[in-house]
Image 1 (cartoon, rainbow, N blue to C red):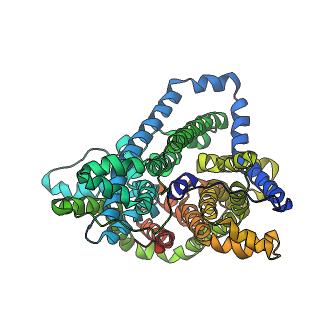
Image 2 (image 1 turned 60 degrees about the vertical axis):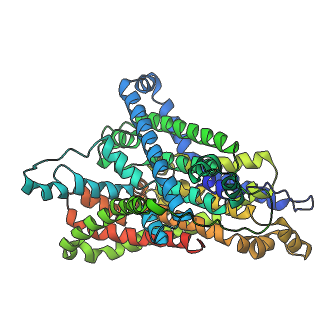
Image 3 (image 1 turned 60 degrees about the horizontal axis):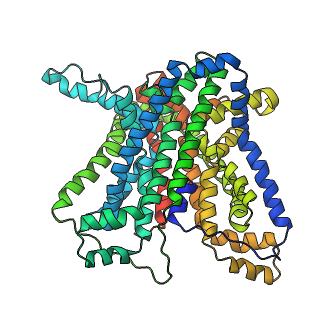
Length: 540
């Protein structure tokens, strides 16, 4: 899953803005109407789940209390807790090393470490199985030494490794942003009082990172709970794998809906806990004035361990998967690579259309939440974030049900695929757009209205250009997320509409590893463009 509103809220100070009484009444009403329509659309999956679950009756309750169902819940929570903890332990030092120290080539390590963000977890899981599996490349290298089999990577540890190495950037990004925006005067004052560097970090720096860290850990938890590819390939019975098996193997929609509602309840609980924790802490500067950067901390004797730490992350998270893919690509270059042009164009077109649609649709709720003081409007916008709670598998199943029963003309069509992507990733764009709008002084818009501009003209000529950075960042995130999305693509793609994720999944299902290299490498390269767009404007 993607930078959500909670991450952006830790990076910038959210100041509720209220327009004066002369603000035209029609525009808020129009924004409210559009937002209500958006909420209705994104609520369809939740309505579907409730209807399906209630249809199970007493049998559904018995299934909910079954020991196997409880095992699925425990497995998912255990995996989530382990991944979140590991991501924090990796993300905090990596963000600090690439932000506050004189680490050699720190920009290189930053980009290399964040590149794991563009590698889908299912591709990473495939590569780790091929490299470290019982009969993988590592075992073949050790076979001359008499080692005929190595421990199995399947199960909890395989899923933990694959998801952790591709989610720790969700902790790095907000923590790094908080470190860059932090006022160095507090740390300098602590140092002048005789505190060592380690005490300054634990007593001054780390407490200020709590909101950003909580947001990053929440994103990691949401991604872990909604991940489908890694847990399926590693054969670990988490929520998404069991839901998919119930839907495809057992054809039991009621049980799948019950498990999905449990998953929704768990994710909502995590969001509530994170927001309560983050609301007690603030990491923005209180005063105004010029912002200066803190002097880099010399690593000294820790330089070599720091380089080993960063090098290991890049080696295991980026180099190993890309090397395995490159090996397969070379071996199967003449078999399937020529046919990748159309899947690549389909992937880019679907991601691009989704980014454009979501970028436009996210503007009304973002304006409603930041430009009106109504509590009802703020709660209304919060309901638009339901797509961020629901896994792609659940969203896809719900849309398949509604399309097949009520809108058969849209069943397995391109617009339905775009609707699935948009429902899933709309919160990413709302969050970044809202954060950009909170940084715009409302006086600019008031001046435009005082000069005779109509509300829609103020929005197009003043508000949108000033918020362009946040809008484009949200669109880049949506583009990146849509191109990597697997379960939504598998269930909603039109017949014959092949994309890079479906090509990869089909090749793996048919055990044709020589076909995996081309589409996987191409997907990674195209996805990396979104990351470079997000990092391009960063000064440090």
